[in-house]
Image (cartoon, rainbow, N blue to C red; front, side, top):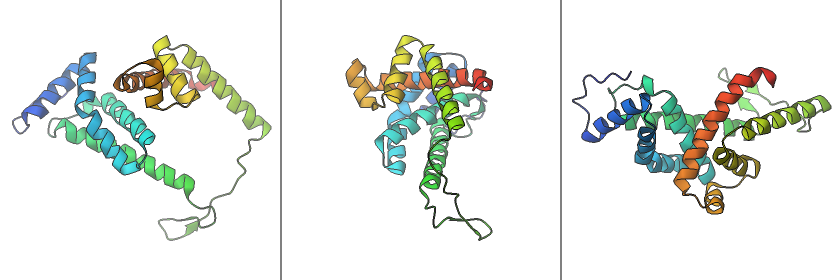
Length: 204
């Protein structure tokens, strides 16, 4: 449960956020939606400013809400919900940027470790050996099998986004759905898939 004591320092907006957080914890799905509506645009533009890529900003926005919603019971009204949410979003984005930089770091120049020693990457071939190829195909088949078990509205969105690699805007236009609905339902679909993968991880 969120500690609701000592809220006098919070603004009216922050107090409304706290009410929504408590309602969401108690299972009110509309509360999740209202929290997203209140902060989706500002989180998105913060992500866009950091990564300079609209698709990455979209994904990172959804991830930020996903992480925040999964940790709602950890939120304390000592800080405004918006401050807490923006911190989660920025930290997640920084992790994303670091991982991306690691991937593009030159194989020749390497990286300088904390002790000052230069660490070089092992330039391995991108070609999978036969065993790796089989394992990769098995994982793809397993993922498609899991996706096929989703409710139709979620399955179609996941297939469009991750198998056909359409943008959120293209999916919205093709399916005749509001852009916000596409993003919100993809967030739910990814959450469902994450749980399904966790429950079957020993099989892949």
